[in-house]
Length: 427
Length: 207
Image (cartoon, rainbow over all chains, first blue to last red; front, top):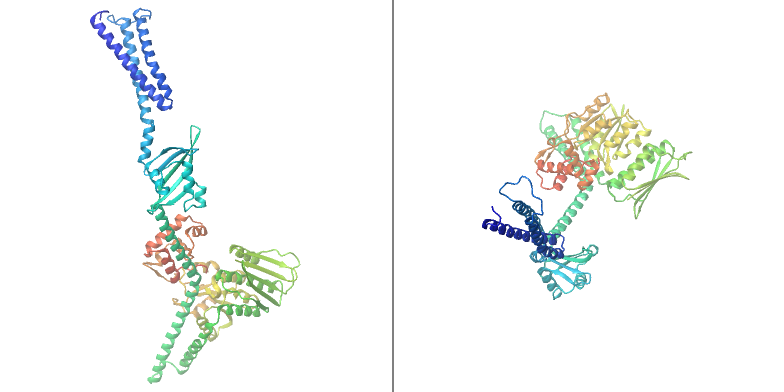
């Protein structure tokens, strides 16, 4: 290509035009990207000012080439001049650079959120949202929040501070909600909205965000759950009560079975008696038959003993046990109600004190005092036997008893003053 | 003469045992009481050779626990556990407590007097297995031992977390056992399962 020829001029003009277009494109996107990414709009202005500057630099370089002040590059094709090569290389470099920067600029453009997009997004949200400054001046309010404000207070959202303080005076403000800066409000249409206030910082400036969410479904589910739990609790209480009484039920069943057996046996004896009386050949002897009748009548007659009260029977059992080992048992107070666990501990304590009274104290009397106190029952066992000469070291039975008492949430005290006494408190 | 103590809280069975002992010329009735808690007190000062011990006795006292105490203090005393409860763990617990023989009031093939004789002769007579109980759609033999342990705790009415803590298991393991129990028995709620289990006598808490 000859310098000054028509083709050369066209080529030069195209290259220059491409350079200017590419540079413009490059600088524009680079500036947009930088300004969006770092939120510095003034960078875009500087970029804009750089546009003619970069065009000037290109022209300067071009003129230097024309004057041959840039050294020629070796190994150039014969038909290409240094200027041609410079022009081509500059164009290639700037093209690559432009493509790269355009990519960066477009990425920043896609990733960055503009004020408009924030506003649009806020408007499309299914919840109410607003932002306001410390002095209450609103920055952004979406239509749902405006509508809620209108429904609640009869006017639009004027001031954030006034809005939140008015909201706090609404019904349904609990301590927990106050602590969490939260507020549940029931609207006239029956829907429940939860308002929540959050402090956020934007570039060091405090901004308040109020969100409003429709929690009607959650409240209804929570209400149903509460009732289900209440029902479950009631059933469980009934079941626990049943469990406390079931032992007695099972024992009664056992008694019933035993009675059935006796009555079956009575039926058999009646049949045998019938055969004995009606047939000449006796299957059973008279003595045998009489013995059977005697035994069964005894059992039926003694059945009435079952009616004795459980507690009275227990007291009698204690007195009888004492009598069997030569100790007089004196009981004050009544054991009262309290479930089998309390009774079990009471009898364990009684047994242990009785064993101690016989083995170690050689006592003649054991007094048992039962008292019902506000915190539970108090059992005191005191024997009139020989006092231990040394301090009582709890082991074996006493140790097991203490473990049993403490496991049931009670406490136990062993005293040796005028008499050896064990006191047990059971809640 | 072998001196016998009867620990039975129900009058009729107690009278039956008393009659059996009195009518035998080999046995002598020493005491007949209704509360297992008192049994070892009697053994302190009087000679007792054989005890017929019920498990569910008056005032919620466990005959098995009393048997274990007596065996610990007086190993020479022979003990026969007599019960009508098919609780799955009773046989094993009786053996662990050192009880000499075991007699089911309802199902035993061996008469009690024969059992007493064999026990006093040094034989340990135990039934081969616990009587089978039907619980909902399942037979008691279909449950694993772990499931039965959880089932017993379930009858307490305590929440899963408390049961898990007591059994040293995770809550998820307890829930898994309960789920299997419900599937096997066909009961729709755990409460129904627990009530049926307790009433059947397959699991008895506290005895």
